[in-house]
Image (cartoon, rainbow, N blue to C red):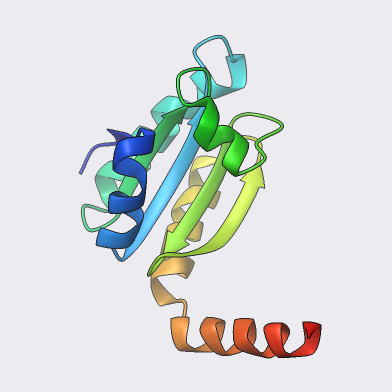
Length: 123
């Protein structure tokens, strides 16, 4: 699957309706974003079962604000509706590919258990 443009109206549905979603927050004027775009696109074509979304921070300022995006590009990943990865800066192609492989193997039962344990500690 090639990349898909995400907007506020399609965001929640995309995150909730897919097992693994990788997001690229970018802007047209951003040099590093322009360099990262083709890398992101190539890796997206290797994983047809993963949704690779692109969010234009100029056009979708609400979404950028919701995630506290301070620098672009920023890559964020959701698995089973839970945010599991966030990193500013362009990822090298091999690193992005490795990230997708690791996320596919991530045990979400363990992640949920860790989240519950942290919530318990905080109260």
